Length: 151
Image (cartoon, rainbow, N blue to C red):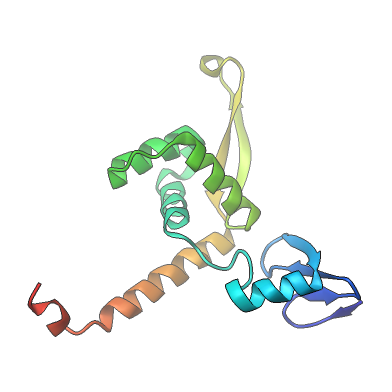
């Protein structure tokens, strides 16, 4: 098995993908992996709009960022009707990408003894938010005023 600088280990059949700064490893058929890199880029490196909003909301809520609170804050901040299932999908996907961490909160009688899963932004999540913000600002600053003159 050979390693290279991109975090890839290759054998005759499979490629093990290690995403830097995370504990994520993905094993795929080598040809499938090369096809995905060539057509879509490396899995986990791009941040979608909803994922960015969820990361920002987790930061806003800080130590109170559990699924229901995230949903309610997203509804309040965006005016959208966000569902709990979309929040669950996003936080688990972000955790899998290494952009969020989670821990179990204390048991609560109000919740029938159940504990909340509390999410926090990881170091990689902070970097992803900074990169997204920098790119968005860089591009926005390149739009000439004349582009908006007749709008």
